[in-house]
Amino acid sequence: MSCIFTRRTAAALAVGLLLCSGVLVSELFADASSVRKLQGRLQKAVAAGDGGLAREVVGLLADTGELTAAKTIVQAVVKTRKLGIYDGALRALVRMKEDKVRSWLAKQSRRSKSWQERYFLLDAISRIDDPGCREAIGEAAAKEKNPRVQDFAIDLLSKARQPWAIETLIGLLESFSRKKQLAPRAQKVSEILSASTGHSIETAADWRKWWEGAKSGFRFPGDRKPSDSTGRTGVKSVIQRLKDRDEAHFFGEMVAGDVIVVTGKFDHVENVLKKLAIPHQIVERTKLKDFVLKPTSVVVFNCHSEDVLSAEALEKVGKFVAAGGYLFSSDWELQNVLLKSFPRTIGQGPKTGNEGMEVGIEPSEKNQAHPYLRDVFPRNPFKLEDFKWKIDSVSAIVRVPPGGKVLSLVESTELAKQYGGGAVAATFRYGRGSVLHVLSHFIAQRDASGDGFALQQMLANFIVEKQKWRRKAKAKVKR
Image (tube, rainbow, N blue to C red):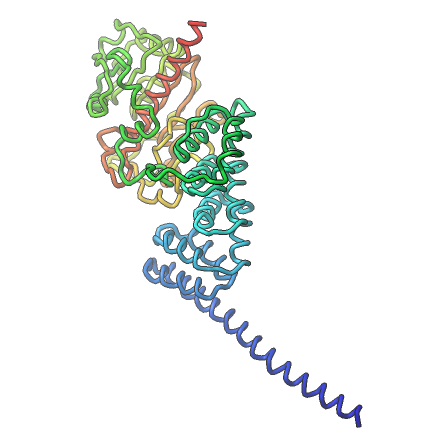
């Protein structure tokens, strides 16, 4: 009897467990089914280019709380930049409180092979109060190989205004200070610490000593200028960006002879220099052969329609750069000057058609951290869609030879497909000097909402880097 009772009891318990587990299984299948349905809706929204529907579906995916949903959101952001779902996806991921989701976000920010995805994930986890997320941001600031993502991680620490961020920043300063090549990053971290704490302390060791005594009762200063996570806010002027970097003073220290503008028919860079308050001197193209070029100067060639420079003038330009001069040129000056003054360096491809064109541009993947590109593009790769470059008719396509001596700085995929050369801006060292060449003209790049005056910013950066070079040269002479 007891045996029968036991069997019946066991059977009853088994039935009860099956009923209960059936409910759980049905719920699991319901959640999985919901995610699959939403994934299908998102695919349709993407195919139709419907940003509003895509944003709505992203929110619904987050409501499921499923890890698969979180992965779908991340993939959608990375693959569909033009639908404007970036900000909504950030908010959606922050709403997902499940530990498995947050753990995956932190891990994926380290291991993703796409630097754009790592950037997005860091932006997301910086808004989540979680130890694993904080650790991932600190690790990216210390070890991330992509300079744009690493700078972004450091900026996220500067915005955190939490004791753990100060602790992490001091650790970074200690690490960066040990390597000479990381001196610029160490300087940046030191400046962030000063701005965040209100204290000016020189060495990493002294920062550590101060923090050990101050952290228990530390309070952040009330007033502080917020940093910009994209590297640019709206449409800042070129001068304002330089002021933010504490480099605008270089222009005030210059005299007219520091920048020489060579006249040209199709461009008037001198008008841009006036607006930027950069002292300069104008030289007629036909008189360049008799003009004394000093290697302490920057020479800017306006685009000209024909080759009128004498062999003597072209030789002078080559010697000027070899001695330490900086040369900036645009469009047809590739054939008029660069190919002749600097043979076996940069090359020229075919010329564009008789009508102007507009192409999307982005920084070169390999050279995005080049000083000439500082503040030219927003750091956030998902904000690049609006950046366009206007190319005039019959423009000279730039060829970047293999070997790495000529660096492509700004590129266009559309241009590469159509003409076999996608470089919109390229640079190379020649002797002790530097050359920066751009496709098209200043007069064409005026859309502040699109290119953000990218060309003007490159010219300003080029001149600033020259002034830094002059300072270093003077310091060596004094020694």
